[in-house]
View 1 (tube, helix red, strand yellow):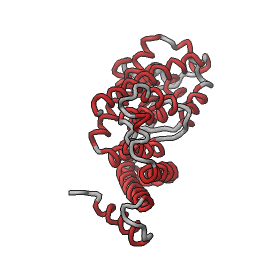
View 2: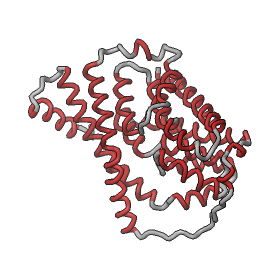
View 3: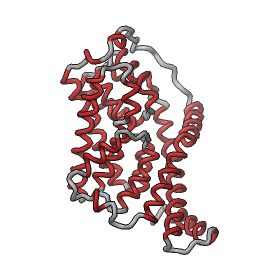
View 4: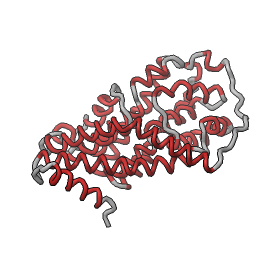
Length: 322
């Protein structure tokens, strides 16, 4: 049973009956692709964000910080990666999160595990990957992203580079044993509804633009054109995709629809997902913000470790799915 059949029927009706486009034409296929993906993704997002918001209401940043501050480093890295999935943040939140975690006594590596997992693996990425690629690719992406976050944090812990954090960060310690007020069930539902609407308002331009670019590629870029330069047989495809992705500023909502279209045109899955990971986890604007609380050497170490992890994951994807 195709759960998305009503959306397919709606896209066909709008594209071919209302807009009177010719079926199987370039314009018709592009518009049909655009309508179908926009409706499907927004419906999935609304449902999943609401459910995840209910779960997140039990895990405010203060509670996460308090929990992680009382874990050993190994357990903390794993838990930080898992909690990062449920608590996405944007680049503007990088400094307050970093300061709050470190000043509460959370180990540096554990903090970085959270900083990697949170933007790269969240409910928006899950919904988009699930809707565009299916549950197997979504699951592999989440597991590989989680592994990168955990291992990156563990390596940073082993390097003992706390001296590369600006001195003022450690000067104001936070009490990590504060009791936090509980929300009622009604308050949780209101919070989830408000958060869902707020999130949709924030990401809809990225989704529409991303799907729009993807629809153009779907209809107008010749088949196998991109595969010629970025197919699985090109050894340089994965590292090149990572380097291209770092300067770009986007989130999962904007980049995944583009990734879907690139894959459809023959770009290997590992290369496209490595590109997506680098855009979300190695954001240049975030590095510029973090420069205020850590030295350049620490940012380069962090970017190098995560970047190598993403490249390795891209090659593994190409090997397994090639």
